[in-house]
Length: 217
Image 1 (tube, rainbow, N blue to C red):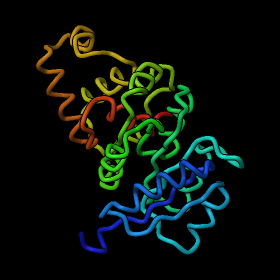
Image 2 (image 1 turned 60 degrees about the vertical axis):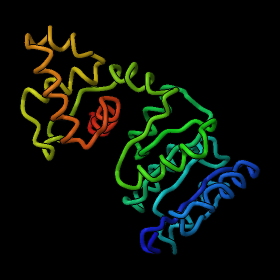
Image 3 (image 1 turned 90 degrees about the vertical axis):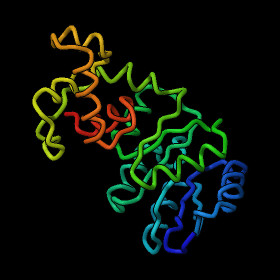
Image 4 (image 1 turned 90 degrees about the horizontal axis):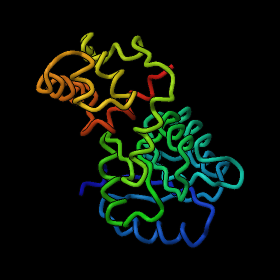
C-alpha cells in the first residue's frame, strides 16, 4: 500500500492493557502509518496540534472527559478526522449522542480485531458502522428524537415523497407499515428506500437513520 494511503490513528483509552493490545494489533496492519495514544481527553486533543490524525478510536469512559464530549471537540478542531467509539457501554442515550456528535462507528470492546480492522477501513471512506449488538437501540429509540430538519437535508435533493419516507424510517416504520400509511405498493416503498440509501451513501436503513439523525432538530 502506498505510503500516502496509510492512516494515522489515535487510540484514546485509559486502561493501559487495552491500549497496549489495540496498538499491538493495529500496528501490524498494512494500512496503518503511525499510531498515537492518549489516556486522557486532554492528551488526545493536544496531539492534534502538530499531527494529522485520520481516525480516532475513542473510549467513552475517560477520567477527565467523556468520549462523547471529546468526539465533539475533535470534530470541531479536525472535521475530517473519523471517530470510532470503542466501549463496553450500550446505554441508549450514549449510543444516540455518540452519532449525533460526530462518531462514524460504535463498537463493543468485545469486537473481533479482524472486524475492527474492517471497520477502520470502511470508516475511512465515509461509511457508518454499528455493532450488531446495539443496532436495535438506534432504531428503537430514534422515534423519541425531535423532528427531522428538512432544510438541513436540502443538499441531498430528496423528493417530497422521499422526505415522507425518511420521517417514517426514523420513527421505526417497516416497509409494510409505510405501504399502508402512504397507500402505495411495497415495490414503490422499496424503490424509494433504495434511492434514499443511494443519496445518503448508506448500505442499509440503519445507516440511513444514523446519518439522518445528524440533521434532527
